Image (cartoon, rainbow, N blue to C red; front, side, top):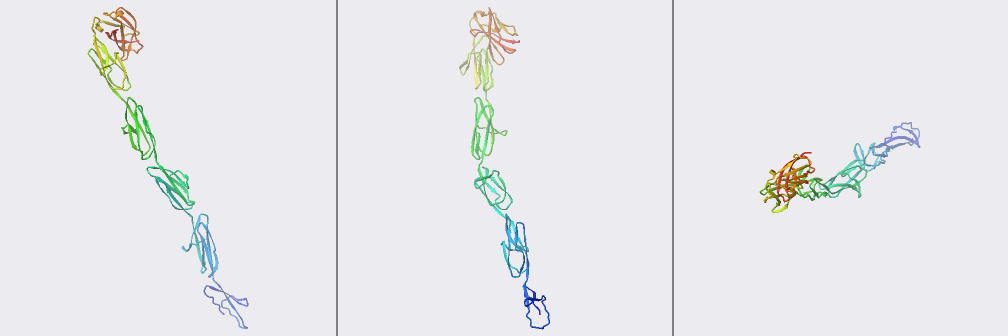
Length: 422
């Protein structure tokens, strides 16, 4: 007898009354009695082999009969997601639980991948952002905020809370996130300074793009020169207006004013001390009468400004001053140096003036000593006798001085050069 299995089946054995009598498909025996034999068949079995990439596990592999409905399952690990079942690199299912009818040996692979998260970026007015997108779990991601020219970056916030103050913020992706870049109008610092001669105003912090004015205020006697930045003159206007586009440090420079002092003299003398002087100089100009003349006064624009031969004043404007002289008349006309002697010369503490044509005890005299700068020193009389007077010299430095001797009514007696040597 021969047992022939059908498709997808295989012969198992021959049984008689439940007892196996042969395992051969072809069973040969000697007929001696009636017999009832059963050929037993079973369905073919097939091996289901499972594999998995990193990130998860699988279940359901084994040996299963032909035609059996079978389910295999892929389970992703933490922070992984199931992608697909593949067989010979071909996708056969995207369901993590895959059910099929067993009909052949199969080798299936469960594919897993890291979870991905969305990074969404928002921004306030004043700049742009980059770095949004979808990224795998544990990826190191950097988002960047770029302010516009007139703005500055303030912070990154998430759900209203500040999470970073750097323009480039780096973090590990672990969840979906929505981040906002915050910008504010840019401010710039204007720093001002001034050298001697004036004050400045207008420094502080101002919004980028604003029009701003700074002002230099010179003191009396000074002129404004210019605004200097990094060694370069950027404006010569006292009020300098510009557009704020960055931090700036500016210096206001000033110069002291100079004034011309011009001296004129009428007939009968000369005037010393004219020139150009800076504001605030304390100047003494001197009127020197010729022989036979006496000093009257100093005038400016026809108005008397001083009755002293030495006129001292502070230079604060340009001036033209005239020394006025008159002719000595009457019985006491003297010829100056021809009639008077001054001795000793050089002198140290005292000097004697002797005038042959004047009785100083009745006329009275006074003497003034002048230095090279025009400073005047009225000498103290310490004694008179006939036609001579002794004067005490002031505490001045050694040097050459000019001495003028006059009567009490301003008639010139003598002009001498005196050397003081102590």
